Length: 118
Ligand SMILES: [Zn+2]
Image (cartoon, rainbow, N blue to C red; front, side, top):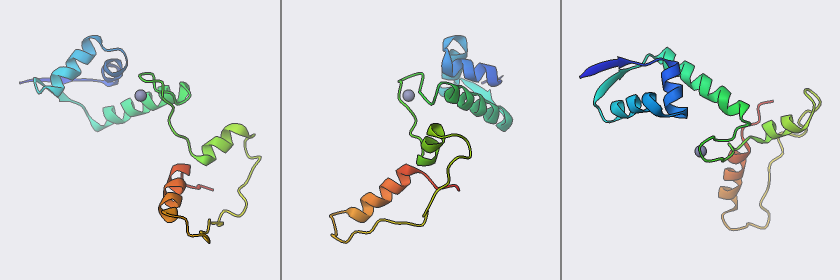
């Protein structure tokens, strides 16, 4: 089997534009060539793709969907840097009326909001 070395430009081109780089990736996926990629190349490719994604305001170029942002990221978008601070971060919801599935729904909502990092 032929062994092929791909750099970041080849991988990013394959994923974004198709063409010959994509054909190479497809051959590797089909097991027709052995694609040799170092961890450094994978890390660089992820960094390049993440930067492009963030510059596109977290919108997927393929399907147009937005990445979910955390509550903190949303606040950062709306306010001046360093102009806000969280108050009463230890407050938690209670369930005095014992709604059905409330604890599970609350857990999911907290996960969706993202971690509090401050
Ligand atoms: Zn998408």
